Length: 130
Image (cartoon, rainbow, N blue to C red; front, top):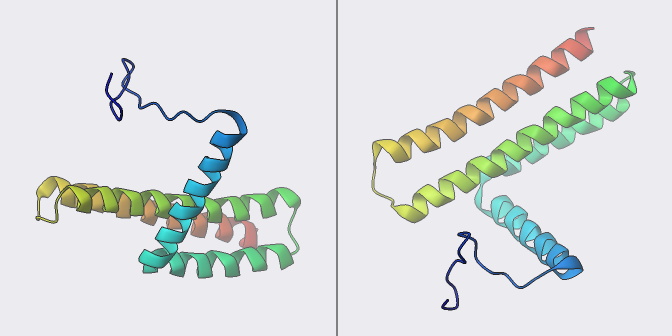
């Protein structure tokens, strides 16, 4: 097997195990977060929105379960935006040429984020309006 080639199971050898692997995972996660923050205005806007919502959730007189749910849907929306940004990056890496499948992939990522934001609005409305 040549270096840089996948093993028989289709996975690449990474050579990291235990704490070293966890450390590298944290570093890569940080790098992904920073890249998304720097390169995606939508992610920065969502951070501001969900930061404000999280602050309000902590100040509202709601049960711990309701507060947890309100915070959880905000985090889900941020997760969806990270994944949407990753999809867009991969599509753009493959080709900047306009292609129906590329458009579909990007539109589906956008639809996922719209659905996540609808979920945020629904949960918040149900909790706040009782």
